[in-house]
Length: 125
Image: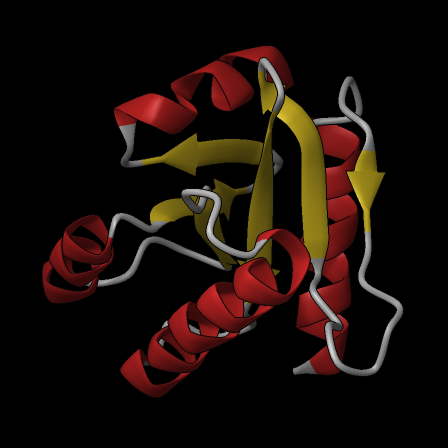
């Protein structure tokens, strides 16, 4: 699991290397990736999970909201999950309903199901 997580994180760092990427180092806020100014002055917080199981996706959503609140307080969140593959349609719909972006890799190509993340994908190509 840890190896897959690290591989995904490294692929993401390479794919969107045009952005400044930060990693949480404080024990109370150990987020995976913060993309600085991904849209104007808005940051994007990304949680990486090594499995598409619903339990991992639920955990990622909770982590993202908690980390965002610790980092940004009441500012409207910009959140996304990076998974090793596209999850089933129920998970996709759940994430859309929660307004949490979804990204995954197929080989070295980064994909998303969300229009608002398309500019990251286009820049990664």
